[in-house]
Amino acid sequence: MIYNTIFAKSFSRYEQKKLGYGALIGFLLIVLSLCTVFKPYLGPLHDYERIVPKNPFNAARISTQMAKVEGNATKTLISETSISPTKAEVEKLETRKVEQEQPLCVSEARTEYCQTQGDIRVHGKSSSVYTVSHETNSFAENVSWSIRPYARKTDAYAMSSVRKWSVNTVKASQQVSQCTKNHSIPAVIFSTAGYTGNHFHEFSDIIVPLFLTCRQFNGQVQLIITDKKPWWIVKHQAFLKKLSNYEIMDIDRDDEVHCFPKVIVGLKRYHKELSIDPQKYSYSIKDFRHFLRSSYSLKRVNAIKIKDIGNQSKKPRLLILSRKRSRSFTNTNQIAKMAKGLGFKVIVMEAGRNMRNIADVVNSCDVLMGVHGAGLTNILFLPENAIFIQVVPYGGMQVEWLATNDFAKPSEDMNIKYLEYKIRLEESTLIQQYPLDHMIIKDPSSIVKQGWEAFRSVYFDKQNIKLDVNRFRPILQKTIELLHQ
Image 1 (cartoon, rainbow, N blue to C red):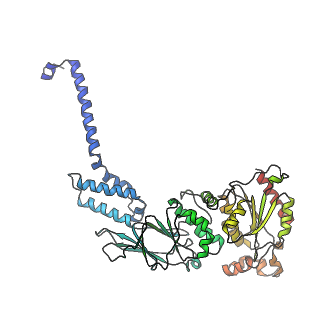
Image 2 (cartoon, rainbow, N blue to C red):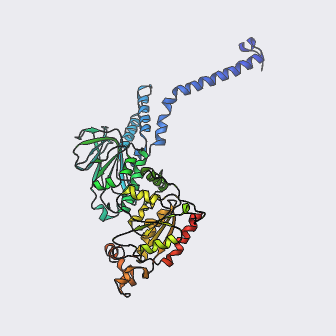
Image 3 (tube, helix red, strand yellow):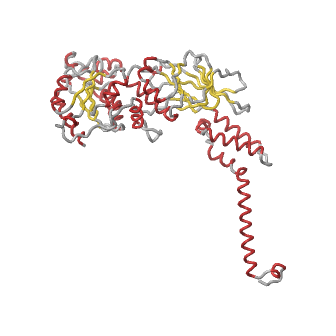
């Protein structure tokens, strides 16, 4: 380069290079500063397209914090910049705000529920939940859903006794009942109708779904019961007090208008009995069992591992669940004597409504055995690596299907070792009531075709079991082997 400019005349080649590098660095610093200053005004509109779902029902999944971010971003765009947003951009932001006020109503295989947040008003006497929209634009619409908050929606008989609730979105400009009581925590509305009174259904349809729905709030949740059964609350009070820090609200005759920041009507539930899918939810059935142990202050986490069955201090405890009316063992004493001879300490007990008592006894045992029935639900209180023996009564494929899906499969996810004993016809008292050529004996599937009530009345309500202890002995011997592992 020829030094014929003023710049060249004033500085040497080396000095020019130094100044050039300095100018470049200074320019980059200025650009960086400008980006930092104007970043708040450039980013939000792109973020909206990324985080806001197009489906209005999915909008409720956006957190309250993100809603606040959007609100602040809107204010920033309008008030702090000289660039006014277009009409289309304003309408888009308003539409998204309305979408966030729409309830997220979900229908799944076994349940349906609605999640609402914002200005939520609950009126128990009319069985109504209102989501109040404070937007005045044309995007806000009145919508209503009808829901029975019990987690067994495909069972018409169970659902017929469940009170129906309406979940509504309304504009604030309409006549909406004003709040008479304000609450700062979320609420969950559920029913204790359906099959409540059956120990199995109380857990599969209500207790496990309650945990799945409410555990996320860590006690800061208001439980609201519709179709209230006071005895049910007493029975499960230890669990309910652990789940919520607040007294349960009886809502059906309540004429107050209760206002909450968030309300869930109905319960989440996995479609399998006594199960939780950890891939779909944040919890598993193992987490639920841990929560139960904590609720009832149960001491034993793990079953024993025996090395010497002759050591008195290492004798495994076997609980035989007895029944009074049907599917009961007619030779319980004989079974207990045989088990003691193999080295078990035997406890015989019938499951009742005293949950703390049954939880303590089951948790103290290493093995639980019983005939298929609701009482087997108490395997939930067994320690880890305990053994569960289900005795399957006579009744063909229908009984075997129920035994598998109600207890065998759920126990696999509970870290409980499962053994099964299917009785022979000779072990059933049905042969004392019906001739061998009767359809009840020859073809149980023909009774299934007559309907559930006809089937249950025979194979569940009229059948007791005289266990063949010699045939059953290998099951208990296998149990001892498993306890050594």
